[in-house]
Image 1 (cartoon, rainbow, N blue to C red):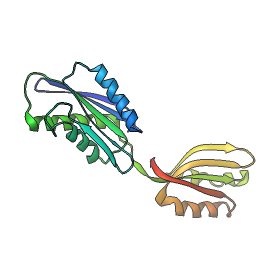
Image 2 (cartoon, rainbow, N blue to C red):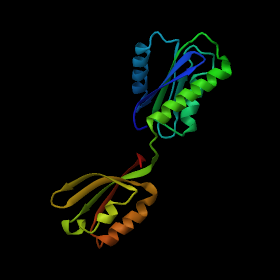
Image 3 (cartoon, rainbow, N blue to C red):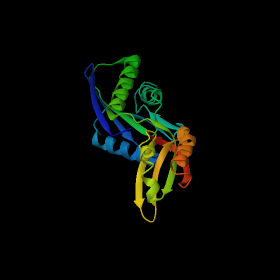
Image 4 (spheres, one colour):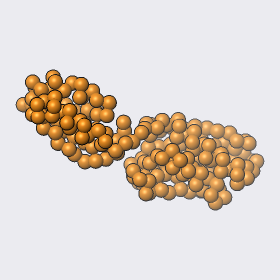
Length: 201
């Protein structure tokens, strides 16, 4: 997710507030949840779901008193349906006096979660590899086009005895990049391959 978000939706006089938070751990998710519960302690329900790790192996949700399966699961489905991880969505409901029924609750909680996710902005995470390039000053001028490669994200450049460049590259493009770098620098560039992780591109 690019940022936190907040949306509101009114359905048959019930007010639904959707929140979306990028998270890196369960502790972070629970901290956000605790804050929203305190902030909206007078709400009828604070239902939620979160999903963590690149493969989504950690997933939790709660109906918070709504009929089973009508709130937490639709929120989680909004997350998994977009193939998202490392995100928490909370939907706060203020009951308006009109019952929505199980189908109505499921649709509205799912819609509120989806709106909050879209409002937060989606970041595409792709397999990538961290790398370090060390080149001489003479060769640095020859690799400008490579450093502008759309699959490369340069994070730091240090000008010392040589030029040291740190960044991340899309994993599938590493072999070609390695070859092109060697060709551009007559094999003098030092390319060190780091960890493979998911990166935003």
